[in-house]
Length: 257
Image 1 (tube, one colour):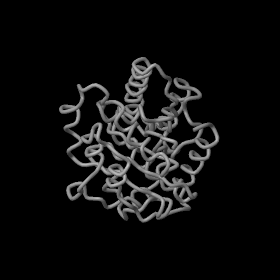
Image 2: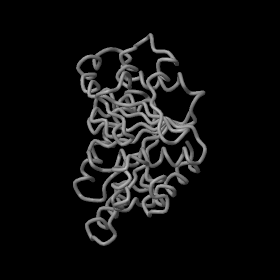
Image 3: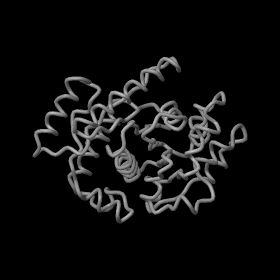
Image 4: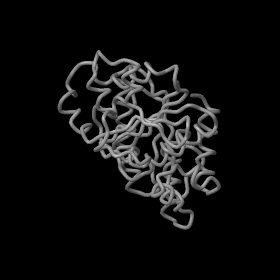
């Protein structure tokens, strides 16, 4: 199974949109995909009409199972979607207590990796939507990943948040003695504004080849799709935003997994 996490220590940069759109595009290409919601805000879960307050099981239960976690337990926590090959491992507000209850225990950073390994033969891709804060959930997501996607809104304040995210990756590389493959994805790009153009130029100047050469444009169809609780590739398959994510997915699939 190929595992990508979508992370940034700043909110509102397009993490959930990126996770949902790439995941649904993969499903529409015939891949069996699991989307993992590790954000206590549960935006990804709500996107698919899943009410976190009514769930009987989710990501929280995976963490609490500890050494008793089994493949059957992970599969029981999944929710189906309107796409036959797309499934959600949903979030609940209880996730917000994990740092306090489990954060200091040894081995807590690898629970999600083990959970995904248990269902490795069931899915070809897993995409993890991360919370915007560094803690046990983000650490688990990154540790489980073969690639980290870092969406960055093309505006000045978002670039400052990116610095924190890259610093976090460097710290984790030292602690886990491995390099993390990451790709910075410019999002919410508005070609009509100098601010967006300047921010994009700064991204390229600072991070070079780590930045995907394309951009995800501002597109109101993403908002419409979210309100319809339907992934944009199904809701508005020909919109410019979906076209851009298709190009991003092609890039990711052809430059190593």
